[in-house]
Each structure stands twice: as structure tokens, then as C-alpha cells.
Image 1: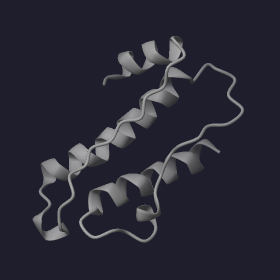
Image 2 (image 1 turned 135 degrees about the vertical axis):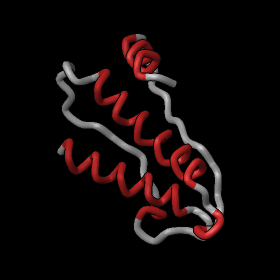
Image 3 (image 1 turned 180 degrees about the vertical axis):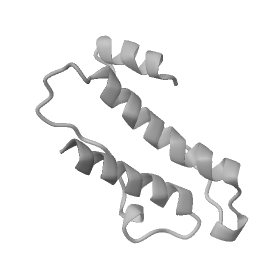
Length: 93
């Protein structure tokens, strides 16, 4: 889903959460797999923030996971994406 699609959904009052499940042990994780999982979550969040940049938002809610803090076997890309999502939330606060 591109930024234009996110903007259209926001204008219509619909929000979407996207994610990719591609669990692999860190030593088996290739660049493409990492990028697919990582960017799906982050590009979506940034597109949503861009689509609402002129709105007078009082708060935002971004969904992370305990995997960002503690990790889960096979979820290095997912944990990294969630940690980056937490950094976006901190930046926006």
C-alpha cells in the first residue's frame, strides 16, 4: 500500500494496519526478508503520519510488541521494526 492509498483511506476515515510474517533465525535471514518485514511496518507508519500531518491530532497510537524489547526466536526483523516504530512514537511525542 503506497502513501497515496493511505492518504485516501485516512480521508475516508479508514485506517489499516499492515505487517509481514517472515520468521527466520538471524543467521538464515537474508536482506530481502529483513527489508520486507521492516519496511512494511515503518513505511506504513510514516505514510499515515504524512497523511495526517495537517490534522490537529491530540494523540497517535502505534502498535509495537514485547518482541521489540525482549525478542522472540526467529523474529529479528519484526523486533527491529517494532523498536524503530517506538522511535517514531518518541520522535512524534
